[in-house]
Every structure is written in structure tokens, then in C-alpha cells.
Image (cartoon, rainbow, N blue to C red; front, side):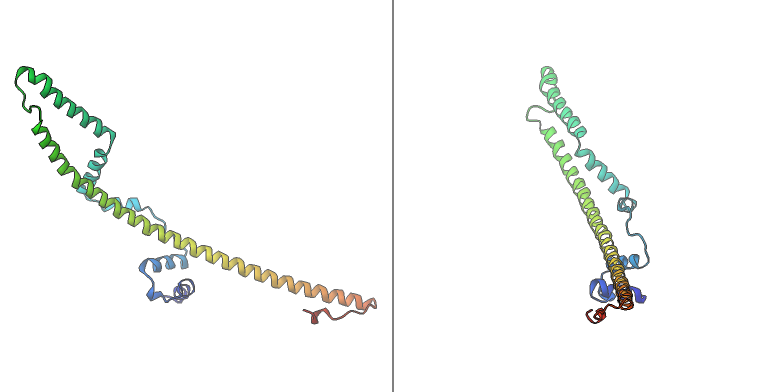
Amino acid sequence: MNNQLKDLAKKVFNKGIDSLSERERRVLHSVAHRLHVSRNINNQFEEKMTFGQRLADKVASFGGSWTFIIIFGTILLSWIALNTIILARRGATFDPYPYILLNLVLSMLAALQAPVIMMSQNRQAAKDRMDAAHDYEVNLKAELEILALHEKLDALREQQWSELIFMQQEQIKLLTQLLRERGVTVNNPSNNI
């Protein structure tokens, strides 16, 4: 590690660079070398997803939509109407009133859909953790950049104050010299400063 990073770590975090986390070292490196830390986490996350994970996300997305609710409600009402009204008149119902077959199908659907939704939620939680870590890096870099700007502004202000005081002392010397040339007695103002 170069000395600039070590000095920056000591200055910003009040500890050595070896005691910083990998994320903090990466941010310090980006500050020292003026690199970007922002990136699109969504693209990185989606590139790592397998076919099964993409399918699980699509199933979970469809299972939580109004389209699914409407289609599912229509199928349930059709099943009940078919078995209760239409086929019951002919005496050929395949799933009479307590609808045991319908309950079995619904149970199997719930048994399959619940783990798929949980897998999708776990992946979303992992993505949220990646987003939070990335946000931390971006915020830390922004904070470090703001601190650096404050230091630059403070240094400029100190330089301006020094120059202003020097100019003021020069003006006082010139005024004192002018007054002496005109014969006016003046106390030495530089002694009062």
C-alpha cells in the first residue's frame, strides 16, 4: 500500500489501513486515485442468477399479481359452477360438493408456490444487502470527498486571511510613513498587533 492511502486512513478513520475493512480500503483507494465507486448493482446481481432463480422470480411475480388473482378466481368459480350446476344435473360430477379434488389441487399449488416465493424473497433480501453495502461505499466516498473539500476551503481561507493581514500591515506601514513625512507623530501600530 502506498503512503498516501496509509496517511488518508490515519487521518479519516484514526486507525491504520490494516485495521480497515476491505470495503473501506476500496473506498480509500477510489478517493486517493479519483475513481468512481457507483455502479449498477441490479446488473451485477442479475448476471449471477441461474435459470431456476429467474424462473422462481417470475413465478413469484406472477403469483403476486392481479392477473393471477383474476385467473385463479375465474378457475375456482368455473370449477364450482361446473361441478355444482352443470354436471350435477347430468349426474356426472367428477368432484362433488365438498370439492375434495379442488382442495387437493389447491394444497399442492400452495405447497409448490410457497417455497418458490420464499426463494425469491431470500434473493431479494440478498440483493437489498448488496444495495445497502453499495450505498455505504458511495456515502463514505461522498463524505470523504466533502471532508477533502472542507480542508481545501479552510486552507484557502487561511491563505486569504494571511494575505489580508500582510496587506493590512503593509498599508499601515505606508500610512505611518506618509504621516511621518507630513510631520505627524504616530505610535508604532505594529507593536499593538
